[in-house]
Image 1: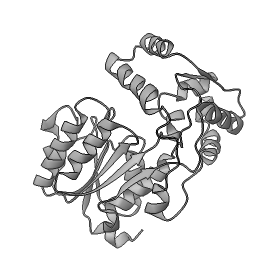
Image 2: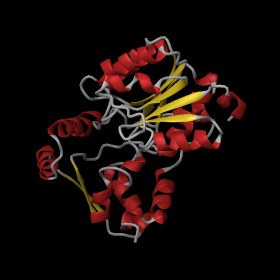
Image 3: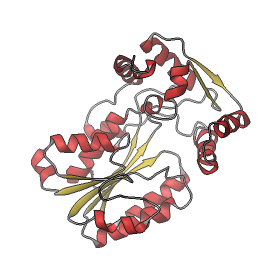
Length: 282
């Protein structure tokens, strides 16, 4: 990475800057000496996608923005919110927008179009399922319990390491050669959830098993956990619609953007097992 190019960009706003990809983007930019501003609901200047009054105060002096949408770009109203934010950002002088999107999601592509129509320089990062969902999100507790139960059968997914997503995001935020690119980001292998579970079990040395359950059983389990109905609807759509095989093929987005191979899931599993997170840090 040409650090002088990055510094020339000025202040970079990272929406979701405490999340899985956002905090890694923040760490990388900071190491390069590039000034950043974190956008989160708990920040000094809070950011909330559902409260447009929180948007403008964060945009002063910003030249580029990394956008992640909560809870997901497949959520109703996401495209309208992304479009409104992008237009406001351009009006406030922001030059470049980098959007984290999802592969195979129609609603996500509506958000992409809204961003592209804003007048900013843009880059789209269409991501496969995060490997880190097994260690930093809702699948961590099932891994620790020794049983992962989801309504997904033998469909394969080329899980992507969020470290790769962060590397591509930083490149897109700091180098003009990525402007106008749509990068489909995946890992180098497509794996079923059962195969992924086996990889985690081998890396951690623990007995962890996978079982495919019905959608009804999945919904009931989420309801017992107190998950809000709108989040349940979103998760059911992702597991039953997006994970239908449409994204099973491996893509070359990481290679195209960075000129190297993406990280393999087994590397992620070994690295994560060594951290102790799957045994509760004990």
